[in-house]
Length: 147
Image 1 (cartoon, one colour):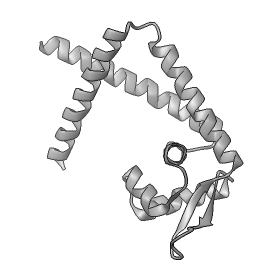
Image 2: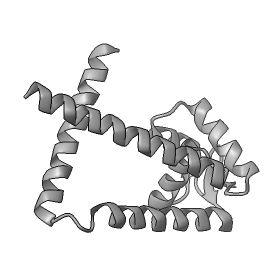
Image 3: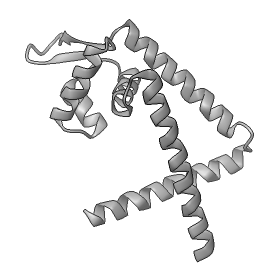
Image 4: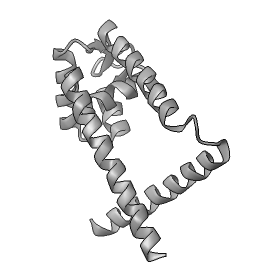
């Protein structure tokens, strides 16, 4: 099992390297960092939100979310709007450019998923997803134990 487990880890690391290279290319082409894309993705899923709710959803500090939002305001992807029921809060809201970026992200996400997995039989894909879920959970637990 050790040789197989090592080979599996080597393949995961290779895939991670490929994804990292693709993300770097995407950042250069789009001008958006991965962190800003995650924020836009979250807005696309949940709609406008407060900086506090976005920080919680992304697992980052309020200071980090402020920097991310500032960058997306500067690039024209989001605005800060008054919160309808809390005078102290503002809502981070996608602009037309932000909505277009979110739409493009969704379309490219679906396209890549189809290119990678449409040829895989449903049963094998389900087993792959289950194995990935288990692997992610184990790795997250190991990371927590190391902290």
